[in-house]
Amino acid sequence: MSKDSLMKKLEEKIKKCQKCGLSQLRTHAVPGSGSYDAKIMFIGEAPGYWEDQRGLPFVGKAGKILDELLKGIGLRRDDVYITNIVKCRPPGNRDPTDEEIKACSPYLDKQIDIIQPKIIVPLGRHSMTYILKKFGFEPQPISKIHGKVFEARTLFGKILIVPIYHPAVALYRPALKEELQADFRILREILNTKG
Ligand code: URA
Ligand code: SF4
Image 1: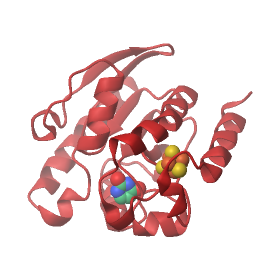
Image 2 (image 1 turned 90 degrees about the vertical axis):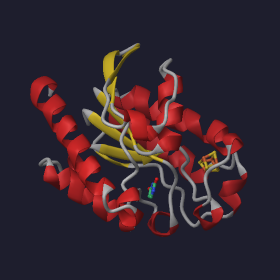
Image 3 (image 1 turned 180 degrees about the vertical axis):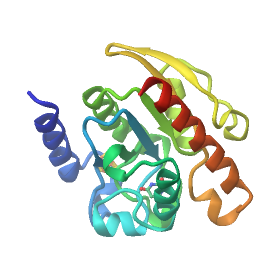
């Protein structure tokens, strides 16, 4: 089956999923958006209010910052794939629970296997923890490892993992915006040399 039909089928499954309690509270599940051939995949935490309303990832305030950061290195949303670890909104935007992450993360694992990106960018602590553990690395404080490059092996070849702060930090800690921009420049360099 083509990437396109595999992803479409998976998205339909996510939209109907009832594997955890968040299914009872959602307006829309948010499978992800962007190119199925993306070299780079961004992984956030979970949908917020606007994402739940629209069924699309990163369309609220944090999304505006992500768009700006992408534009700053010459990328459009359609050049990348954007998703979250948990596909339905936790009430009041609380952190997803371990059970919810456990129930939902097989969808993310499948998305990674289908898209086969060259670079995975976990956004924020939860995503960094899940992705580093998945590929056999010890999670560390995001303040310590943001912008660092981890090389991992997969069945489809070598990938680079570059954890970055969650874009929402720029909303309440404006000083971190420059760190986000610096980390995005690292992504640009990697894409220039390997892309
Ligand atoms: N924050 C996230 O982690 N994901 C979204 O989709 C929106 C905000
Ligand atoms: Fe299913 Fe994930 Fe939504 Fe839970 S959060 S209902 S596991 S799609």
